[in-house]
Length: 314
Image 1: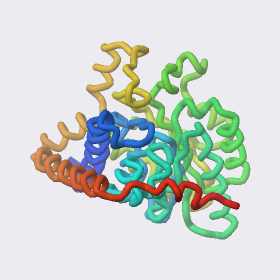
Image 2: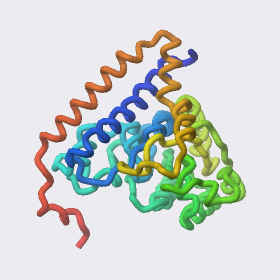
Image 3: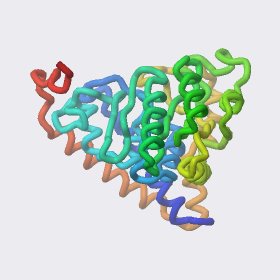
Image 4: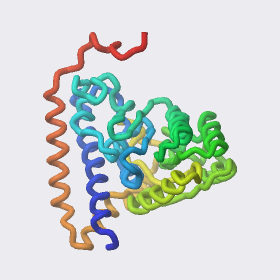
């Protein structure tokens, strides 16, 4: 396998995201987790490939389904669990929960429960980089449902006009909450809209982290050199519901089975096993890492109710 060391690293991070979210599913009925949760099981290759293709000081603005981006960008795992538990040691003191993960120390500038709301933030950061002459990049990550929001179109148009260093990355998992994309738009090729606004746009397989990494790295370099924004549509799928508890009655058994055959962990495991890599050993190591972080977090003190307004502006 070409660049086996890179692929192995990407696989490990993708597996870490998967096992963290499976641990969250197991914990959720216990009521230890104190916030609504949206999982990205099946979409791990997007976060892994994107973040591995960026520089450490590049900024990522994500969605409420952002566990994968938090982990892939380098956020502390114990602090993430503590945040979900509503603990004092959480990344936001236990006050933000799953849908608002942030880790500015590693370049994850925030997530939001409001669809498309972080897209203009990424454009603003990119405009700042350009005006200050800073060789950095901003990345806006969003789902296909966000492309129906007005601020999405306004942001892409402004970014193209001002030629700022920003990448627009659409995780197209074919569903906006419970509604299939075919019921929302006539033209399902989302790249066409970006092209119409005057920026390069490409559609790639979002299930292969190596493809994602190479694509993002190339576009990021072009943006830093003054090429302006670019749009990437990453085709992928979530294997679980929109939220924990969603039984996905809107999807057929056949569709879910087909998605399971092309999801990234299954494909990567097969590729590495064929190359002689002991994926079972990697899984054991990652499971231990996840369990250690989950246990450390639950031992942390519960967040103080008296501190809930501590960071509000006067």
